[in-house]
Amino acid sequence: MENEEKKYEDVIKALKGLKKVNAPENLEADLKRRINSEKFPEKERKSFWENIFVPGKLIPSLGLVAAAVIIFFVVDTNSEEMDNPFLIKPRIREDIIAISDSEFEGLETKKEEAPKEKSIEKDEPVLEKRRDQNELKTSDDKMTTGREKSKEVQVPELSGKQHYATDQNVAESFESGGYKAMADSDLSTASVSPAPSTVDSVRAESEVVTGQSISKDELNFRQVQTTMEEKKVLDGMKRQMQSLEKADEHQK
Amino acid sequence: MDKTLRELSDEELILEFQKNNTEDAFNILVQRYKNPLTNFVFRFLGDYESCADVVQETMIKVYRYKDTYSSVAKFSTWVYTIAGNLARTEYRKQRRRNIFPISDYGEDHKPYDLPDESYRPDVATDSGIKDEIIQKALLKVKEAYREAVILRDIQGMSYEEIAEILGVNEGTIKSRINRGRAQLQELLKDIYKE
Image (cartoon, rainbow over all chains, first blue to last red; front, side):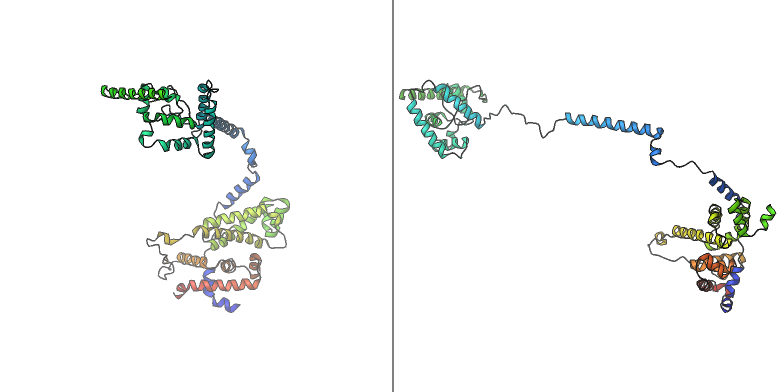
């Protein structure tokens, strides 16, 4: 042990020779101050809930909550009044004639009932024949729609542009009085009308195929202002139509 | 009364303070121990301000927990144990505070060592500077060795007392002291050459 102390003699000497460090002069005064402050401790700490329910904090917080509730209801009612864009029905375009199949059938039945009631007794055998023909055709085409039927019927006899009347043709037929014939005839579809040259065939077929009459009011054709030359041409066509109608009547 | 109190030993004073809550007894104890404790804590920490705080806190603990003192142990042992624990806590706090990557300050972000000029023999001429060098060397010694060396060679305590303060047996204390001294000798070899 003594050997070890001799070994580190210099170190021990150096450490013992270090100056003594004294405490600060105000240590005792500070100590007394701290002890006295501990003797009279500060007010007891209030709990979290006690702190919350202090009127100074409670009133503004309640005000905030009330404001939040009011804002919520105002915003909510506004949102209810607003229309959901996905629930708005699209506007119906009046310039387009659209007839559903059900309407088409309804009109057909009306058509069948009204003008033909008078001649039911007279035409009973003929009607029966036609019904039989209709039943045969409809039974064949059970799976097809009304439109498809009309197409199938029209296709064999009518071909090309002639078989489908343009707006102009329809207008001409109305002007020439041919509209009566067209109105009387059973049209398979509202949008398709036969050309004047194929009136008979269309009439015959339209009787077979379920069709309907379309009044002039129901149609919404484009009004075309014609020149003098065009009027002459139209007059010629009208005359042709009338002559054809007369011939048809004579044949009957 | 005051004279008689001053004549009392440390243990008698603390007992007086425990039983009768005599604050004068406590004040006398503070007067007796403030400088030795300051010296011990300063040599351990190397910082005077924090040393003063630790000493004050030690006295506060003595005042607050006077009833935990048992008359079996020496008062000095008890008070040094408190001071040593507080000093160690403070030292660890300081060390955590002072650790920062020096490489952040370099342009090339490479770590480098700062040259320590304090050990140059031509600088260590004045006794004040010598004290500073020894203090710096002391702070470089391992924490456990340093505490034992300070209590033995600076405070002049017996191995038995040191063992009691640090809560380890005497053999451990002796080895710690020797290792601490060896480290110091290595650190201070340039001074001894002169």
